[in-house]
Structures are given as structure tokens and as C-alpha cells.
Length: 499
Ligand code: NAD
Image 1 (cartoon, protein in one colour):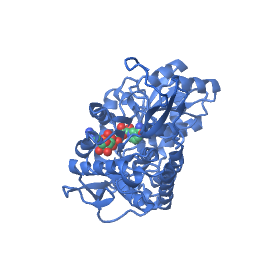
Image 2: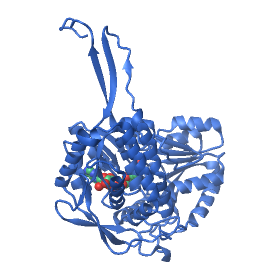
Image 3: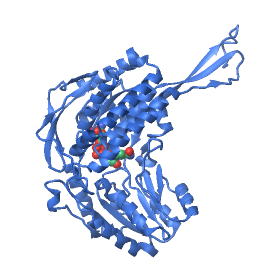
Image 4: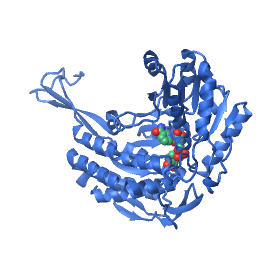
């Protein structure tokens, strides 16, 4: 069992390489979801802090050490930071758990894996190559340069704060950008703690800055600031839509990683025990609070009853409790508003006629303490047009929908506003490739679920987002292409016609 911090710790924000309170001098509380009690005080930043942070990031981008640093040296800094995170992974993971209530076992795994993004993108930093163009003009030399897009505003949600921060930060720094980070108001501590390691790694002042506070004030000030060139946002669909509108006003570059209503398709030839485990991992791991939650189970008629029986039997055994305990399998919901939202989604599913076959209520087990726990919940006989099958719950609630042939399964899987991920469970190789082609989602996992890698592009189709994180293509999200023309001819041609 990992220890949680006791008492209330007060944190500073980090702007221009300096630690200090916000301009307002005000703080807000962050709460431990298992104890349902505050454990830290976070500076309440506003537009003035944002202005300072963007100014510091712009200064670092255009002048001084970072602006003139060779990409190989940038890569070295990233790799050094990776080593420091590895060194402090136990501590950072415990901080994450105290802030967001996810399992220590899961968060320790995530934090221990984060350095790989820094090693991978650190390695890419000096491999950003332009091209010499075999240009079709006489006496002309033409080449491309890929330059940093500029100052990046990186805004993250509460469910995997450090991992999702790193998905933005590592490629942005490798590209030579500078950043202002805005963590979720529910989980700011780990991002602030990460800044200690930035300093230790030796990043110049202003390269990365952190402003803390609420979406509607500090987030809004950041996404509308004229000094920001690009927004990299992970969060909910409605915030994403709002940010996309404000980005359009000043043509800021934009990456959006939003929500999902991902389907798990279990075909009649599936290896049932494995599929049961995979569907459990998709919806009950992290208490269902993941963008990639496999919240719609599409199961073939022929195996529906057997599958559901085995699934419920396994889900019933999930151990709930203190997320710091490495034996726990299902932890609390991160925030009180999210807890209330999940329970209201459950009520509306009942009201629309879905049949609750497991859970369906808050968990009041002794091992849940005073935390915000919801019982793993399964609704059977769901129709895909019910609200519970269309709306992202972001909690441990599974909707079970039947299908009778493959085409029907693909049609139901795609009948959603979202397109983040899907799971396919089959032994038939032809079906594996067909499903991967027919499902409109950014990740399709076959006979597995919830696998991510620094090498693998991640992102959504449709309302699940714009752009990709991780993998080689992620670095392009932080670069602008410039085309350079050099005329080495003796004479300028006719000035009144296009060359
Ligand atoms: P949220 O949209 O409420 O908040 C996310 C972040 O945006 C927070 O830092 C918040 O302060 C900020 N924010 C909110 N309104 C803003 C505004 N008007 N301007 C600027 N910033 C603003 O989301 P959440 O509840 O923290 O997280 C849950 C959501 O995130 C879910 O929908 C989930 O699917 C999504 N998510 C997506 C991914 C992915 O990679 N696709 C990963 C994790 C979570």
C-alpha cells in the first residue's frame, strides 16, 4: 500500500522559470477522491498570469538559449527529463492517485512508461529533415524547412494528467516549440511536480510554464491569447467545440483529443474467456474514466447469453477500495460532479427501458470509505438509439446490444457521433481485416484492448477529435513547413507573369 500525503500542501505556479503565487494571490482546493477531502491548495491563475506565461514562452521561443539550441541538444534534454521521471516514478504516481483516484498499479505503470515518449521524441528532435526540391525552374534552388509552430497552449483533463501532458509536450519540445500547460483544475499537482524535474534537467526558463485554474477563466484566457500559435487540447466534446470556435477566430493551429462511445464487437467465433477479460478491461479499468472506454458491447446473438453470464460473473468479483492499495481493481470516481453525472446517466437508461443486470447504483461497501464509488454497471437489451448508447458516460457503465450478422455489427459500431476506438474479438483472419477497414475509429484493437504506445498514432475520427498524438506523425502537429526559393540566375525575367 502506498502512503498518501497528510495535511494540506500549498503549491506555486511556474512561469518564466520562477515559482510563485498567482497574481490574484488566491488558491483553490484539490480533493482526494478516496477520502473525499481536500489535500492541496492550487494557485488560482487568471488572465494576468496567462499573459506572463505566454510572454515567457514567446521570449524563450524567439531569443536566447532554447531558440538557438541545436536539435541534438534539445533531444538530450528530453532524454534527461525521461531519466528523472523514471527515478521519481513512485512519487509521481502516488501524487496522481491522490489527485485523481485512479489505481496506483495503473498510474505507476503509466508514469514508468512516460519516459519512452521523451526518449522517442528526443531521438526524433534532430531528424526533422526538409527536402531539396527538383524544382522545374532554371537557375533556381528550392528547399523546405520544418520550423516550430510556436507557442503551444497544452490543456489536459483529469483522467491521466501526466501521460496526456507528455503526449503533447514531448513532440512539441522535440520540434523546438515552447509551451504553456494548463492542467485540469481537479488534478494540477502532478504537472506542477513535473516542473521540478524540468528545472533539474536543465531546460532554459520559459520553455515550459504552468498556469493553474479553471477552464472558463484561465483556460479561456489561454486559448484566446494572441501570443498562442497552437492549441493542443484533450478533454470533453463541448469544451473542444468551444475551443475550436475561438481558435478559428485567430487561425490558431489545433489538435483535439475528445471523447468516445467506443464499441467492442464480439463475434460468435470469439475466444469467449479472453473477450470477457478484454471487455471488462475496456469498461471497468480506471473506473470507466477513459476516453477509450469500450462502453458499448455488441455481441452476436448466438453467444449473447453465455457471454453475458460470464461477463457479469467476472465483473462481480472486481475488488473495489482504496486506489493506493495495489490489490484494488476498481477505484473511486475522480470528482463529485462526475459521480453525480454517472448516477444520472444510469437513471436515464432505466427510464428509457434498458435492463440493469449488474450494479446500477452508488457503491456503499465498507472498503469504499467516504469515496465516490459507483458499482460496475451493466445494462442489457439496449437499443443503439438510447441515450445510454449515444452519450459518453465516462464511468463504469456498459451497454449491451445484440447483433445477428457482421454488417449489422459494423453499422451499429459506426452509428455514433464519435470515432475514437473499437475492439474486435474474433478468430477469423478475414474478419479481422474487414472489421479494421469498416470501423470508422482512430484505433482498432483486435483480440486486445486499451493498448497504447509512443510509436502508435492515437486520435479520433468524427467528434472524437482532430489530429494525432504519438508516433512519428505527432511531430508534424508542432511544425510549420516553409518553402525557400533561391534564384541564382543572372537576370530577372518578365515581372508581369507568374514564374
Ligand atoms: P473538460 O473538457 O471539462 O476539461 C478538460 C480541460 O479543459 C481542463 O483543463 C479544463 O479546465 C479545460 N477547459 C474547460 N473548458 C475550457 C475552456 N472554455 N477553455 C479552455 N479550457 C477549458 O474535460 P474533463 O472532464 O476534464 O475530461 C474528461 C473528458 O476528456 C472526456 O470527455 C474524455 O473522453 C476526454 N478525454 C479524451 C482523451 C483523448 O485522448 N481523446 C483522453 C482523456 C480524456
